[in-house]
Image 1 (cartoon, rainbow, N blue to C red):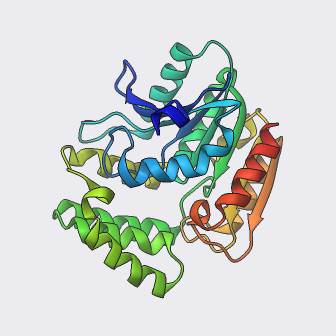
Image 2: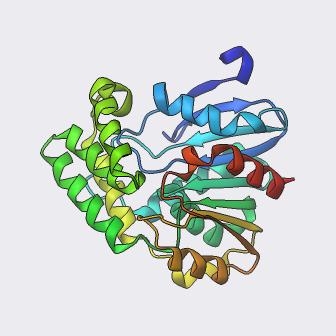
Length: 271
């Protein structure tokens, strides 16, 4: 795998975990979605990342970047945004392409609005200017299970957001039980996950959408339970140079369900 994709993983000097693939001169920084552990992606997560980004590796170098591990009890999303801005300013010498999925897509909106000098193009996947009431309720339940160290129930609850089909959710429960460590790993710093849940609740980019100047692509599933489609449309209308693509009949799991089409749409936008 390392030979095929020029793979490297580790931490930037300020503590942000990353994995890098590709060998092209153009840069994509992919801001990670909701995460249980702020470590360099590995196992199942790494395989999914490679499947989603393999088409870009000839012309691009792609970084999947998480949040700092071992955060204090309250680490606000504004600091998360500044962490990404500082890293990009330091590591790259010119504006880059930024992509974010779900929580990562929401953080990316603030990054683009507050630091327009570092963004060449912006791609927002399965996110809007705010999290839906349904999404917040489900995440709050997941957080309560997490506090009780009921990690299986935490993942099971989060899957209510991702999987629209009850049959698929049932099958997913079996898979989670078999591969629990791949999904969750060791929980060393419980504050990290709880801070991300809090960020989803507190983030609302409605008032800063007009400050996002970079060409922007927004892709979302019509049935996304975490971000209401009306809010997705409002987000696209509020960004001056935005294009919106809605996948019919797809929920919050569009990265897996529509992976091939998603890669084509993103590549068309970037090129």
